[in-house]
Image (cartoon, rainbow, N blue to C red; front, side, top):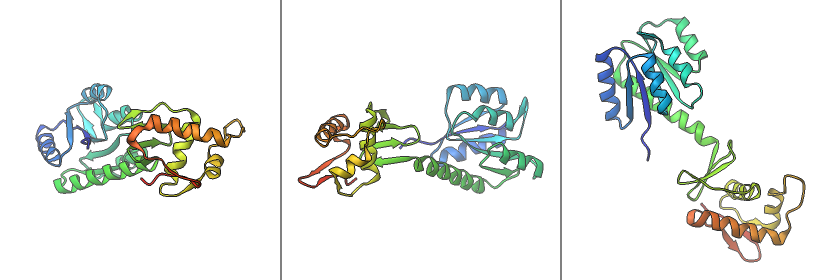
Length: 222
């Protein structure tokens, strides 16, 4: 499994060194930056699952770094010296997932990191379907095998989507045909379905087992 990547932006060397060590011990990959400029340069080259941002930095604020992360699916936890309501409200309005005030308990921060990453992962997973070794990114309309994009036609995509949405269920040919109705409003003929199933099997290989139930239809169990 790929390690979660965390960006830490903190100008206090003692705090940063302790956090880097503790976070690495939890199994995460972490990169430390000491300023807004350094963080922005790093963000241009790397993608992160989570950013831990100090509010006050030598050349700006954590909000400046947050602005640079808006284009990416990166969770954010803010570190702030004072429990200031104005900054906290602004943090959440900027899209922050959480905040913690200094001085903080290390175990509490680690717990918040874990919770934030798990929440983010569940949100991402909710927009995806999994069938065999295939991942369907429903929001993007793309299909992957081991992170490699599979080139499917629109009808083949609707076909694998139908199987993924009905895992373990025996689907008759008519049920499948109803689901893959051509987007232009044209019928897909029954004898054509066999051809599309064959093509889909060839493209997916051993990643998905599309079982033929003779005389009844098709089923995918996993």
